[in-house]
Length: 374
Ligand SMILES: Cc1cc2nc3c(=O)[nH]c(=O)nc-3n(C[C@H](O)[C@H](O)[C@H](O)COP(=O)(O)OP(=O)(O)OC[C@H]3O[C@@H](n4cnc5c(N)ncnc54)[C@H](O)[C@@H]3O)c2cc1C
Image 1: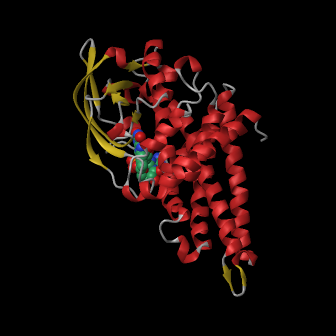
Image 2: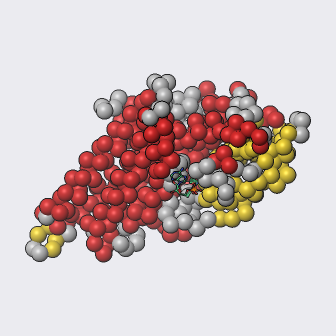
Image 3: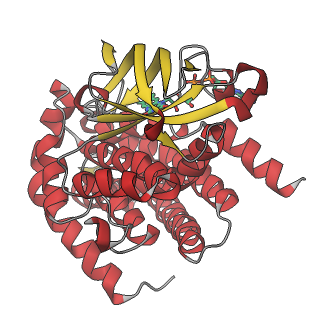
């Protein structure tokens, strides 16, 4: 796919921010679990957080393909920074697609400028892939919902100004009994900080909601539409996750080629061995395929066509190929690849999350088979 010049220009701009702001902080942020707020603000300063929404709301006025390129180039240098920004857009998508004009005007400009950090809360201790099995309740009290429950693995929660929370408002109606509510700071509290294998600078928390009185003005869409809203945002988020895998695969390719050309054993560069060449050739091939899948899904979204199937395909392919090649990239660098701070070491740990969050690989396959076998 040949990209229009405006995307090449955007890529160069993101790349500059990534190299200047993300790269120098990535290893330390990973080691110390430092929330990437400077990185987030640097993206905000160039209006890259909410790039796909209109300028009228203070946003970047581009599209899903542009947001994929930002996810790709940021993840190439630091997945934690990329994920922090991606979740901003995940919660933004809920507001943009289902919010009232008033809600859009209230949140979108602040989110674009980075002054307001959004979170998206679907998962619960007992409800992961089977999200509709949640127990967080929203009891209709007339002018508000009384919300109680626990959400788990919530990205950005400690720094979040609001959460788009999916809660059960009608227990008899299964997935159709869920409602999306905007909970403001003070209506939720962090009860646990997670310590993770990878993507360690991204903030992941358990959140408790206790007797929160959420006004009905904070409903997104309609009562009962929560599941649709969550799935719709996750579908778009999967394009971002696929693009993140693409960015990290590009980093693996760059580092693998450089190392293969420089490291000498048995009197020659290790890259002169076919075993190494083939690992690199396979990585380059899967990288190109993954990038095309991600851009294709983004282009479908931008032309208003259904894209859930293609987004699931892009995510499952890119994340699984990415994991395989991350292991190979460490192998290519031998002991050095296993040491910190080495980017391939971090990417091998970071990459694993991409086949878990925004729906596991198994869930993507359910989406794919459900779509093509119906
Ligand atoms: C770092 C991180 C950040 C996250 N951020 C957020 C966030 O911001 N907001 C949020 O709401 N959630 C978030 N999550 C949660 C994430 O979306 C869930 O972890 C994910 O949906 C899977 O749920 P689970 O972990 O409970 O796994 P489970 O659903 O318990 O699944 C366990 C295993 O069983 C498999 N499985 C389950 N059902 C089936 C089936 N029907 N067929 C085949 N296999 C199946 C799964 O694929 C998986 O391999 C985050 C998770 C992590 C790790």
